[in-house]
Length: 130
Image (cartoon, rainbow, N blue to C red; front, side, top):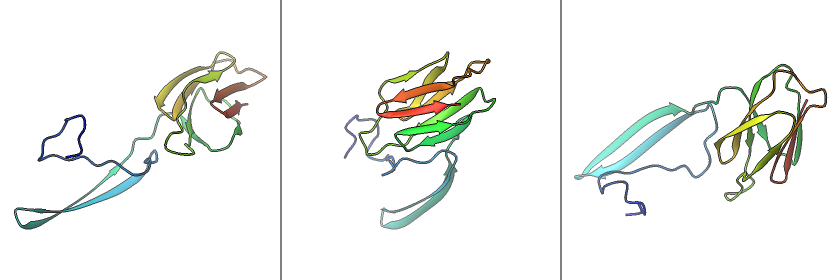
C-alpha cells in the first residue's frame, strides 16, 4: 500500500503520470488487472483542459513574444527537471499575474499597451512581451 496520505482504501487506486500531461491533449488509458481470478481490461480516453488565453511554452533562458492586442496570455515554463518549479516571479509595467500551477502563470496585460513592452522574470528565465 503506497498511499502515504491514507486517502484511498485497499480497493481503490490512483494513476499518476511519469511525465507532465500537456495542455489540450487527448490521452488514452488502458488498465489490465486480475480480480477474483478474472482478467479485467478497462479503456478510456480524456482530454486535458487548455487554459483560457493564448498559451506560450517557454523553453529558453530568454524569450521574446509579440502579444499584439492580447489582454490575457498564459506562460508555461517547461521544467528542465522534476525539481524545476517557478518559485517567485517578477514583472513590470502594470502587468498582473496569477499561478495556474507550479510552472504555469496567467498574465493579464493592461488595456493601454506600454511602448516599452513588459518583462516577466521567473527564476533564471526572462520573457519580454512586445
